[in-house]
Image (cartoon, rainbow, N blue to C red; front, side, top):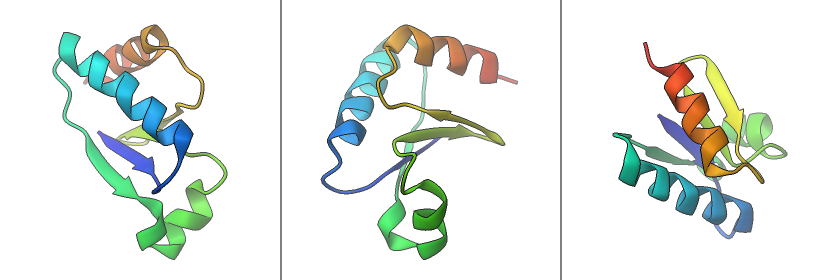
Length: 78
């Protein structure tokens, strides 16, 4: 799982805390990706972060509650 974020993003920090709580209930490996390190990532995600990606699927996390995230993760499993 990739977690697209940027430094000093309050929504990103909130979403990461939610993911951390989800990770206590289900196995989840998260790769944190700072969109500021790559101009292409910045162009793609600047207005959408925080975003969680699994393969080709992406979930905009801003304002989502943990149950929605867990359901999405469960549906994303192969």
